[in-house]
Image (cartoon, rainbow, N blue to C red; front, side, top):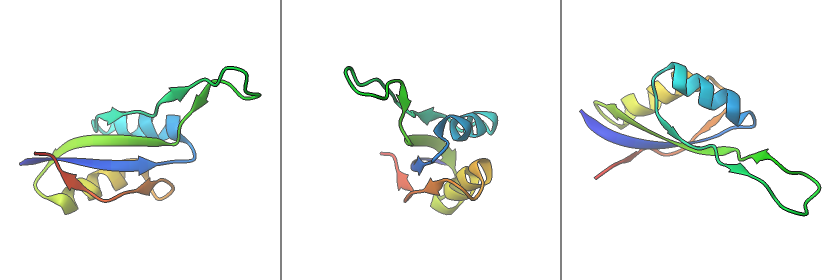
Length: 81
């Protein structure tokens, strides 16, 4: 098995992260940003990065897609060195 990173972008980042957690796929993000002086504070960003072990790039992408469903955007899979 190899380790891969797969970026994910979602309009519902908290729910997407929770779905990945339930599937056992670790995530970095989504980040929580607060803009001082801005009208909107406490924003959860839409992007996150997953890191997981899989047999190949296709298997890594499939595992992430199965966890998040059709809504979120799953980016290109990259092997980790």
